[in-house]
Length: 68
Image 1: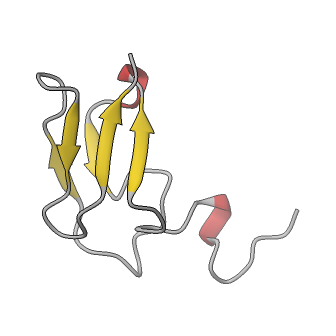
Image 2: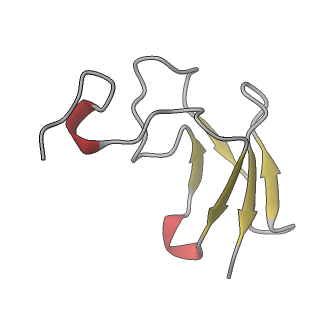
Image 3: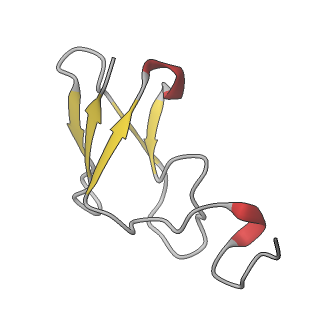
């Protein structure tokens, strides 16, 4: 599969959705996540999700939910 210009190295576009489900294996949680492209997004920010199971990015408003 060839990567398109919007798909840098097989990564997903940043800020493409408003809600993401993450797992403990994905921690520490950052937005954009490591598997998202960063060039067209906001600066990476780490989000504390461990205590409540939910976090919201202060830059883009994306909501994250901890599944396990």
